[in-house]
Length: 149
Image (cartoon, rainbow, N blue to C red; front, side, top):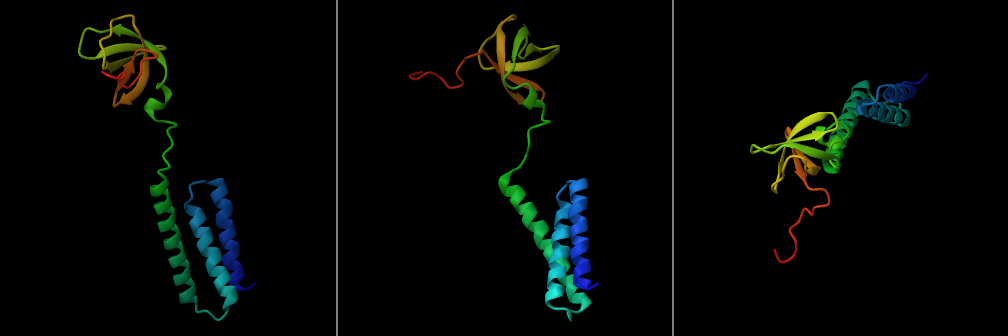
């Protein structure tokens, strides 16, 4: 079995490992190994040191490209962020005596703030989360001021 074929098979094994343990890192190792294997098959007399340098170069380039693309696309899912589950929900103001409101959402109470005065018993809609405080407004209220105001 040729050395180039061994590099390709190792690269395919890394692809398989990436399927079992997703995280994108093993993908770049697999691509680099396949690249080194293809280069070794095209130039069978390539010294081992050049093959390893090619592997490291392709690996570094792939990791750099992957990090760059991730930064550009800003792929940040909002699945487990605290605000993703409460924005848009309707709650009831339970306490409006202090600078912050208390709002009941489901079975829990949250501190909240609103741009307009609210009283206990008012229904509110969650429009955002700022740290541990909810940003709320009256349901159906526009977030922009009316024309001419």
